[in-house]
Length: 102
Image (cartoon, rainbow, N blue to C red):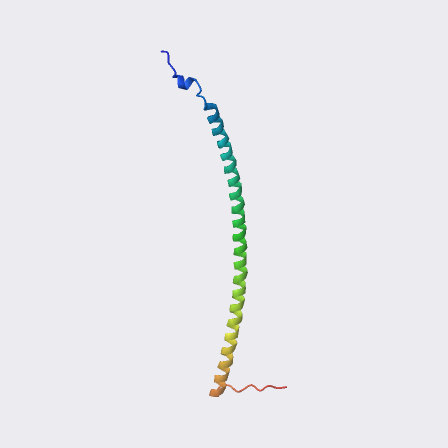
């Protein structure tokens, strides 16, 4: 068999070279853009990770401060409780008032 190729497929149209050249130019620009975007996303991800780590460290420090504040508050309340207990025991006559010696 002899296969006959249509004329439109065997001969380039008038502006086919220009169209294909512009297609390849657009594709090259698109690939450059995608590569640049990937680099930007990597930088953004690194910044976000750094911010996340900094925020976690800040929260850890904040938790330590909150725990210290909580300890101080608990200690103060306990001291107040001991003072009130001592006062009640003295009023009931169970404990003798402490005398301060100079």
